[in-house]
Image (tube, rainbow, N blue to C red; front, side, top):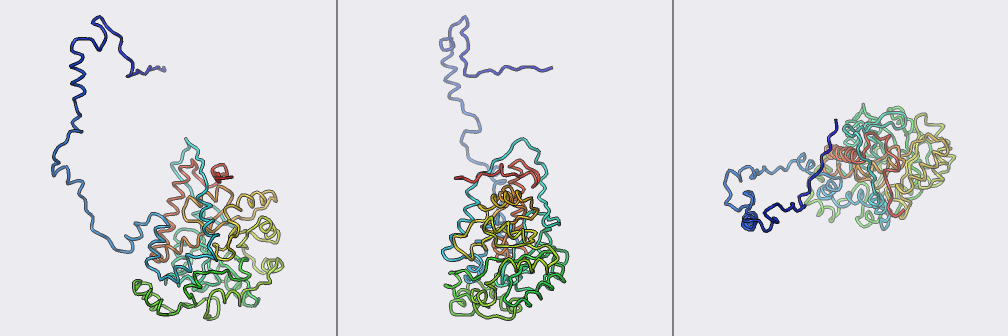
Length: 448
């Protein structure tokens, strides 16, 4: 039986009784004065007792270990700060910088900030499932590690740290053609991991074919061909730093090393840095790209790749809806919406802004091609926003490298822990418990 309880109103003036109104009853003024003068015991000032202070005086012993330093980082941005302190300027800027005025990179990051999440309430979010399928296989998280060149320059563990962290997290790792660990060594370092290989097509097709065959033999199930490097972008930080491969010991770099001894100790006491998939090369990255990579690539070359490679084929560097549709028509199993992290064409299209149009177009074509996205991702909330607007998967490059520079393999692990926690919290607050429940209704791009 339901009982209805009528709330009382403490501001209602009591009805006068036989003795008159409340204000004129005998003793009313004295009682009111006494009540006003009464102060709760908790608000009366007193001299604190030691027994009260003791529980508050919990001084912790300072911790300076790598583990403690990484644990204190709650965001990827904080790991970036650590990385900047521990890494010489030239390799840090090689990672952190972009082309020309770095407008593209700044806009890509701002794109994730200029959104509004639209949460649903009263949903059961006691358990959050972040797992997904990408290119026919499961991934424990909807994010993988993107290909990054010359990774051991940032920190000596390089590709080994990235691949092993990805293996432990149950996500894909992509090795770059310009990596500093070989296809075979990465496969041996992370034998249970899902390893992908990123390919730059060279003018020498025989060399490209050799890499493709090695990738297949080493168990890579996905080939990711990058198509946005017809020529090198103008990476001005590298020019200003005199960045060469391998790094040169100039007076400036020696001075820079004086307060970053750990990086230089690792650099000088490990195997010399070289491109594991290329012949030994000395010079700038731009010179290498302009001399070795093929500016004559067309869709016919993509057809050749499709015929040659029997695994999953992904095309990275898609920047228009039209090109997304065309590469799928030419046999791509997936695409990566990417402007190369802003490192090629400045003022290029922003992948996050491009995402809804590409998703709509491929759905209209009844395509099953996977839509992936990189550039600008610095938090788990960024990843959730991308998934809601139509991405099947995301890739991180700089974010993982910040962790690598901050603490090697443990730093990469910390990046993935931060992103996983971010994603789970964001999804719970949005009222969704699994990725399949995310829809464009959960995100509004501000100003549109």
